[in-house]
Length: 276
Image 1 (spheres, rainbow, N blue to C red):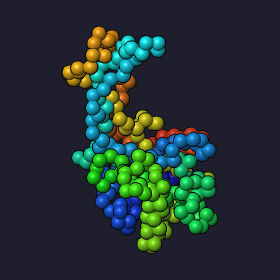
Image 2 (image 1 turned 45 degrees about the vertical axis):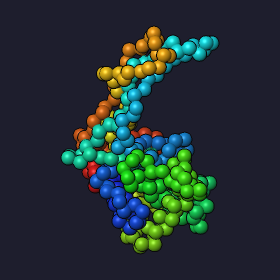
Image 3 (image 1 turned 135 degrees about the vertical axis):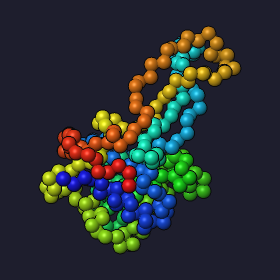
Image 4 (image 1 turned 30 degrees about the vertical axis):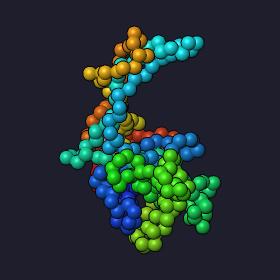
């Protein structure tokens, strides 16, 4: 069985050694994991998840009267925090997820990046583009997700500006022009069905319990900040009922799952990919 996230991790390790713009990335700070997603459904094909965002400023939820607009009740004060993910002594900074099997069936046709590639017959390059795309989201200053300068030199409010797509396509060319071993990326040339017929199955590292994974969470403030906002005076405060969410993950929360066309299932063996 081919472990797809293993292969993606090895590919990323090769990319960051060959593409100068990405050379600052230490893949031991990154975990690559799989999420289930059927082909043809909506949703992201891949996502870069940042774990080093700072704790948010204190806030609260509130409700207003539809007629008067007056605040009628509010939640207790809370902050939003990033979960902690550690592999041994190493604290992970970024997670990159790939949606399987949807990622495997990507092509360039009718995508925003198609115009940057001359040969549409090389549709598998869409997958290499996506891999580099997600790596490029990692901020060199560890300040979250990278901000891209627009045509006027100012940081774009969009993480996917036209400049972003053009720069990713340039890095794809840089990588291929460096003549990497085809064995490093040849698995991208096959769609899901072709890979499944060639191997006994397609698996990937995931977080346990599936399909959950580390995400930002809200935490009640034990000592609320002092507020001078008169709108908060005499407003009913709702007791805090935050959903239970894991705040610390380790290697024990990783598992390997087999991905099928319509579902996924656990593979009874120890995960081989944790951090590079």
